[in-house]
Image (cartoon, rainbow, N blue to C red; front, side, top):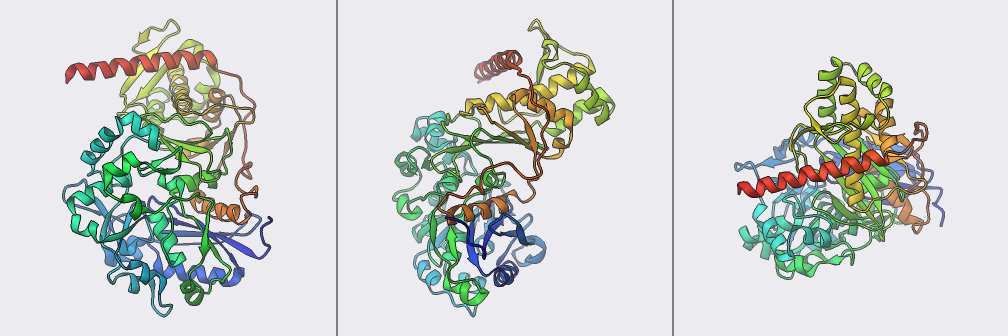
Length: 531
């Protein structure tokens, strides 16, 4: 099915963390006017992008919550409580953020009967939500609930095997468990629980929208293989929770026509349909147009790796989600705390603060660094949980220092070897046609990109991720509109560049792998001895 010539496809980004999806609409001029009205009336750090059937961006807009809607008194869109652990947002401004929304009994009737002569804010502030300040992704106050969930599942690794991740305080399942325990009366007055993604879709539908597989994968509740709610996790969280969540659906699902409220108030076409909304990371994967075998590496203060995988192997580090483009496959996400700040620290110490000298060191040292390897964790790393700087010479002897040039290459090769090895642990494998897509500040350095290309034995392309979540949502709308047969999602990013085809680093990879896991094992043993 080809995309209609007069259609637009809308992508919404409900910042700070959550990104949601899309809806195809007719009559572009009217739609752009409707977009401006929706954004002006209902947003809180909301971005929106409209694309046509050829993937051209025809309109974009945004509203900043803190400065333009000051009545909610938030900082960065959230409210930090006195315990410094609990972080919530006012639900009424939640056309925004990663979190959960608790609909009061009878709220579905309000959604079905929205008055186009009044704003959403006016109508939703009256007896619609059972919880007015819901936890968001920055909340870290549910540690006990995380421990309880892991115990019920049979341990952290078993929970990761079921849901794609070990228990995390920011994941919605654990926040639901805490809210039920601490605010039982409000919980019992709830008839539906939405993620912010499905909440926003519900507004456009005029009825409760299903949680999609991809965003549902970030709750510690969804069995990522059966793509149904895990009975073990549901029972450990709250009784009859499946009734409150509703059945999850594929992220490519067309949920239904847009609510008559938006047709009459904002000028949307009656033929506009709403596609399942999803989370920010799944939408980013779609926006980067990754395909099977690809890997995206964001080289920023922290480094982040996105993967498209077929046979996942969940671990204690990293996250596995159902894929937002092909729901029968998977995506994975890895975060590394020691990124650009560590590269800058070595630059300052070894090259006098000069990126030119840093790049020259990479050009003038050989691939494999003559057997010198190392890993550099200036602060406690996330993946893996380790700290310290360790250097090894070609005889596998740990040394306290090396020459500045060797240090530079050992750092960069070590960082990228770590990215590759942890990706492979989650089920990633390099295949013919694999591409590495690089973004972030360090992606402007050709010598760093060449090392990245060497380590992954694949060409590296540079991409701009500034609007990847909005674009990914719009791409997903077009994808669903064409019955998942459109090539819009997947394919080479326009305007990308690639270094030459690289050699391999098999020997360095294996040596680094042995050293890394030996060091981590030793650290874990020392921790056990201290307990």
